[in-house]
Length: 629
Image: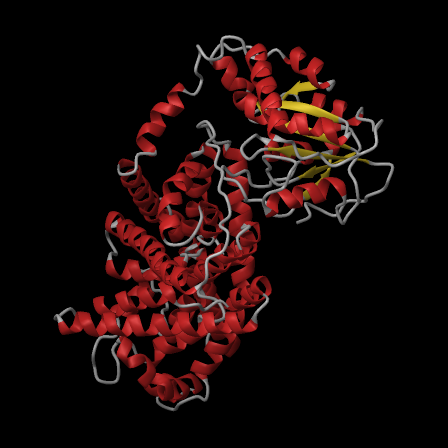
């Protein structure tokens, strides 16, 4: 992953940042290069290295490389292999000129291992100590001169919140010079490991006098006693997710109204100024209606990203990883699978790429097969519409329903993983190491920037599919023209084709119009919402927004037998279908790429959609048999 296009020459010094996960390495990189890479509190989030020129405003000419978080120069996982490749022989500029070893001052004894190993490589390096503010709050002074004497390297303090020490980092990086031949760190025997471990303990004690008496982790440990409790921890996690999902509704409501009103005003203005114009009807009732139906949910997506970003930056999601490690082990996965599975709640594409980090081929395969079941952001507009139909006036119940859908995705994924665990032969399991960071106040500017970038990426990805299907569906529902207006939809191309496939969707409690939406969703799940808006002709009026108009149409829509289409049972069935169905063709292509098997990707596509359809039908018919409409 390249941070940006930068001219690389032998004259420009290249410096690699090396550090353990949660050491503050990527935060330092962001300050140095003025980039906005995500800083997360769990290992394995970075699978490829990034590089960029130093921020021009800082007045230097250096290239910095952000490597994946590592625990050792002896690679034991894919991310550590990538880090070593980036240092010794990367594909862009070969070997780097120097290293910045980023060390968390509150984890000094453990993190100095990388400095000891860096000594053996011959690379000139700079020690950058982070988390000094936490030490100062505990009235602990870190004596850097002791470390400078021990390693023969300059030591610089850096504050990731305020950027203090940044100029010193750049100045000392520019002064790094190779004087020795470069070698790879040797593998230590047990005796040497014990000696160097004891040496690190002595260094930590001398550099942080009285540290044990002033436990800066006291408050963190107190909080963890509750949040990491096997019972109360899970209860808190679910309660927190419920609050987050509820806020997606009530906090986003005014922004959704503004977007809806903006699109509605534009569409109404176009129709009034150009009456009886075919192009105006197409633009207003086709293009604007389609985009409005999806973009109105962008505030909810932004709030979801923002909430997750807060949890990540504060350090809480690292605790979630430890909570889920044991349950994952029971269904055949290691705790390391938490990273790609969590990524799947944003998008399956980067989540599948993140499975490269899994050292166990078996774990990697099971995780790849389960990832499409995670509730990605593309499902959110569909869930929001269906839940809005069921709970139009209750953000709390809507939030509980959304949390249930997300939890349901985890449960179904766990069941699928347990089944695959019995079907796939066991191999040597990969290890999982987790270092819990201290709780920190999130940096709001970074989180907001990340949310804007991720939301922008979502809109850019969904936009082309929405436009194409807006054109196709509007044309298919408006042509050929019928002399009787009330029969236009039935006599249109979409109506004729839909009535042919209607027997397939009728057991789900819906008619051909919803079936058209389900088929169009295979281009992008969000298109389902815009398809319904066009097919059901959800035009706003002076008293209702477009979203309200669509939900109103859903309440009134009836099939050819005069029965209501959208009922409690059919909406629940649709929710279950979208929870399981694999409708993203890009995900199928990425699955083929990562597994190197078209057969596996196609089987996954068929099985997921077949199971989704069967369960949706079973739930709808089951609820109706119990008298639930």
